[in-house]
Length: 422
Image 1 (tube, rainbow, N blue to C red):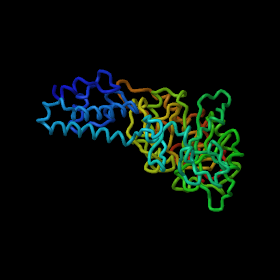
Image 2: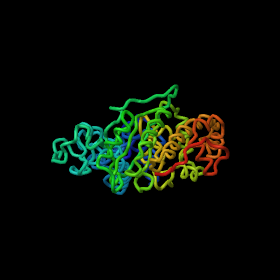
Image 3: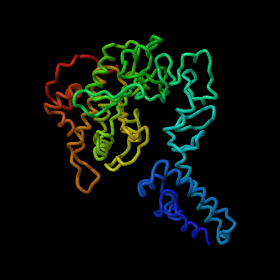
Image 4: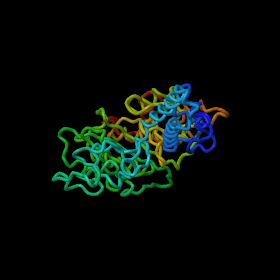
């Protein structure tokens, strides 16, 4: 039996009977097919796709080297071409996935933790077997953790001096907060840097101010700071919690807007949105016609936040990369990653109101029949949506910003004239 006959008789792992090894080779032989094309064509994605491609690559190598394939020994160029195509595909997907050094499970590289001492990655078992060392800015296995005098204040959650470890789940301590009849839960992360004369106990002070609402966590992307992570909360509860922080006035010790490192991320509970609404949000946030408006509301351009990619409605059904403008890689939330860091009240409130308002706006936009495009998903229609009396009252900080920036006309509520950027 020839090599190609063997390929036709073996199906790819996780594809059922829909794709044989030869079918995969047939896609690859023109050097234009990538692993993302397999996601789009067959609906197999993530770890399953990685395992399938790895398995296909290893089986093809075995078939090529099998001594029973005498008919193909006289055509080494075909075997070489076949192995090259599968090797290129496997290498391309391996850049995004990794096999855990401990448990052997495969996970997305962005969701794994790099352990320098092993020169390898660990996945979900990291929280069970590894600890973060604040002073060294590295993870260590429990058996190798370098305890010293500086570590005597660390507890099992990596807590020290008011700051929890990077991988600590704040919902272990903080319950969702609801106000009135509000149902949609939002959660915020604001990154801050310490100023030069900052108090050594600043994180503990922030923690006391935000008690039962937010915790401070380590963030390795910052130079000398931390991130403040809130509990999931409805919009009025979220605004109330951040108002306490703003009234405590930490701007003389912390900075966020005027840094090159800080951002503000806002999560939205997936259960408050349909897949169609998530698709519309992806189109709005990534749409070329909305790019200038999005950069204005974000306070920075797209090269400073995350990757901006063309999106269609159906992309809501796919897991995105972690670092996209609107990330959909998490199972329970979607994450707006566009905003520049901010600890000024007007800036924080505007961002929160924008996320809630845009989630409500997309519900009013009908899907065009038989097309992936929705023409009404433009910032001009969003501005018109914001011009109703109800929305002016529900989103006063956002509407005030729209008026000041010239997107809208009208009288705004008497909001305290304070800085929007801090």
